[in-house]
Each structure stands twice: as structure tokens, then as C-alpha cells.
Amino acid sequence: QLLRRALHLVSSTRAGESESGALIIRWLFRKFVVLQGMRLDTGDGSSDVPGDLGFAAGLLSRIVQCRQAAERNLLDAAQHFPLHGLLTAAQYVVAEIDYQSSDVQTHAVQWQQWLQALAQAAIDICSVVLGVLTSASPEGNIPASFREMETKIDDIIRSAEEMNIGDSVDGADDGDDEDLLGGESGLGGSAGPRQQVILSYCWRAVKEVSGVLAAVATCPPGSDQVSLDSGVAPLLEPALLRQIGELLHTLLTSIRHRGAFSAVHPAFTDVCGRMFRSPAAELNQRVSQWLEQCLDTATICRVSVTRRSAGWPLCLLATLTCDKLAMQALLPRAMNRIFALAADLQIADGGEPATDELGDGTTDLPQVHAINMLRALLDDHTLASDVVPY
Image (cartoon, rainbow, N blue to C red; front, side, top):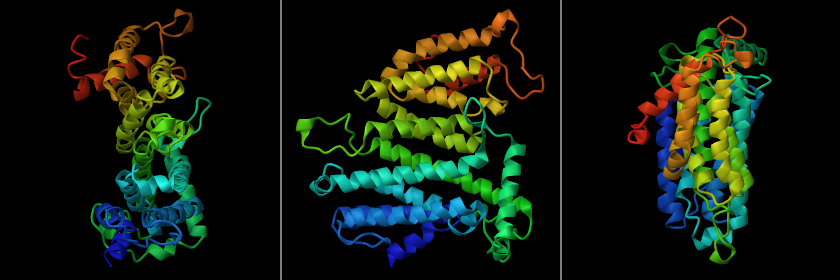
């Protein structure tokens, strides 16, 4: 009965209820499934596998169903198939698994497949919501303007109305400030609250997806970490670890909403730390490449105007604070480049002063990004003593 109640709570549109449900699922999984070996059915879990693997498989099945609903229509998914609670519960489950135990090692292949499937489901969810939060460009995804986001959301709402799902929420229950359905007044027929529903759904999905991917990247043993004679089967391949890192980097540098990219930052920092400490050169060196890419992007003045340069300063901060050795190795070069960029007004090719190329205020000058990055580094407590010389 407690598990059924928890599964009901994680499917709530209210953040407080979904978080409560996820915490109950975490406690049930740890105390009864992992420690006592009980079999608790979360739905669609196979009876031919151990209880912990069946429990995890049932959660993944629910996440996949909600992802499919989001692919059909985001408004319908936000109202009836919320993802954030299930993703939070999946993150907790990944963190609570004892990967060194004999039971997990005996079924290492199935656990590896489950982790890969969970990561792929999270990646697919990002593909759905990024269509709202970002805008395509020759340089890759850049932060969408608020006008572009409104246009995309209006298209989703019109699609939902054509599917005759708009009328199903006219009688929505009253809610508090955490209610996705628009608070006390419900959705009614207004497009404004419906836009808030979709944006809130997308931003929460990005936040929880980041946590799930960080857990998958950092909790299980990777093939780059275990030796052949250790007796421990690796459950994470370097290719998946790098794919997760690339996606989090894209999220952090593509989204302009501060709450969303601020939520991605700690996950990206954890993954950068895992990659930097890896003995595999292709993983270790990618962190310094991200740092250089961050500074290069600001230098060529291709970042659209955003408040405080959006997630780019946090991207730089993540690469520097992911590990103490990374800080010692990368901070001097990063600070020198930032100071040079902030002080140099002759950055454009041919020695001409750097200006907004289009003259319409759609891009920030490189100096603006340099100052915003410098501010982020000076404000961070992790770098407090290390930035004193600068």
C-alpha cells in the first residue's frame, strides 16, 4: 500500500508531492528491496529477474510511457503524464544500488542494459523539450529568444486543441504555487497559463534529467576504472559517459532560463569530475577542451544576448571546479585568457573594434561575456583562495 501511494505521488504535477513520493520509493528500495531482498512490484517489471532489478525495470517502464506521451503532445504530457517525480525516483534508485554486491555482479549484463536504457530515455526526453527551450543555428543550439519559445508553445497548444484535449482540463483542481496546472485558477481556457504549464514541464524535465544522467555517469563502475583482475564487472562504457557529458554541456550552454541551467550546473560539474579523473585520455582531455570551447565561443562573439551570458559562465566554472587538480592545471590559463578578452577592444578580424555584427542588439560583445565569466569565478566559494592572486 505504501508503494502504491508513493507511485501515485510521483505522478503528481505538484513538485512537493512528487518529491515526497520519490523519497518514499528511495526508502522502500533501500530498506526492503536491497537490504532484505523483498520483491516489490512497480509495474511491468519481469518476474524472471531479481527483485531489485525488477523494481528498477518497472520504474523505467513508467518513464518510457511518460516520454512517449511527451513525444505525442507536450501539453497533454504536462497535464497527465508528469516526468519529474519518476525521474527523481530513478536517480535515487541508481544511487542506492550496491554495484559491488554479488547479486548485482551476477546480473551485471542486465544492470548494464538497464542503465543504458535509462540514460537513453533521459536523452530522448531532452530531445523533446529542447525543441521549446533552444533554437537551431549553424553553430549549434543557442538560447531561443522568448518570442521563439512563445511561438513554439503556441503551436503545441494549437496541436493539443486539435486533439480535443484542451477541454479535459477545464475542471482542474485548485493548487498551490507548486502546482503545474497554474495555481488556484487552474488552466481554464487561457493560453497564458497553458504556456506556463509547458515551460514549467520542460524546465523541470531538464532539471531531473540532469540528475539522472549525472547519477548514471558517476555511480556505477566504468570499464575505464576497473582492471581485468579486480573481479568487478564494469557497468558503464566510456562512450556512454562521454555522450552524457556532451548532452549536459549542450543543455548548460543552450538554455537561457536561469533556473534551468543553474540546475544543470551541479550535474555537469559531477560528470566533468568523473571524466577528469578517468585514466582514459579521450575522457580526461575532453574537460580542458570544453573550457577552451567556452572561451573561444565568447571570443568570436557568437553568443546571443542573454542575462549575464546565460549558462556560459557556469560551464566555465564547472570545468574548473570539478576537481582540485583540474583547478590547478586549468585556472591560470583560463584567468589569463579572460583578462585579455575583457581588456581587448580590438578583437574583430582586421583590427577593427569588436561590435555587435548585426547592430541590432542580438549579440553581446566578447568583453561582456568575459566580465560575466570573471564575476562567476570570483563569486564561487570553491575558488575563493585560488583567485586571490588575480
